[in-house]
Length: 217
Image (cartoon, rainbow, N blue to C red; front, top):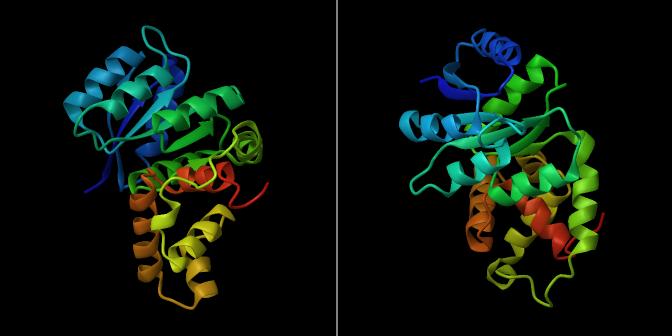
């Protein structure tokens, strides 16, 4: 089954361009496009797409508020990618706090936008590289962590190793090679880390590690 995508942006030209890009891929299907955040929330609830791509600045309800409503809805399985023309740390912070699976600039090349939709659909997360380092530094320096990171005591020594490698931007394949285990074993460890720490995805695992001084920027 193709990945079902909903597009929400108040610029019709951008929506049509992104829809055309998605339709070049056999594994992606644009099931709806809307022009405001309030309609986006309603259509996500009705259609339950795999991924919703939301612009930050939209009428009636902005993309960040729409993200919060979508991801707070009971039984929601839709992943959200937030798009913006503005390189703003505050936007990134709020999107991640809401549980978005990605924060990307609209200036991304089409092939990277396609890749981002696929990444979100499979349950991973990503942030535009131009803002990642600043975001991590903000989390690492602006919030004083508790003496014992919440949930950290429940991790096994191997799960802690995996968390630190995730925080150092290692892929599953790289973690598997470094620990001399199979990729499926790494995926299991990653799932256990996220579950034990109550984290949504790998991006939030990175934020957790920096926020609690397990690694340093």
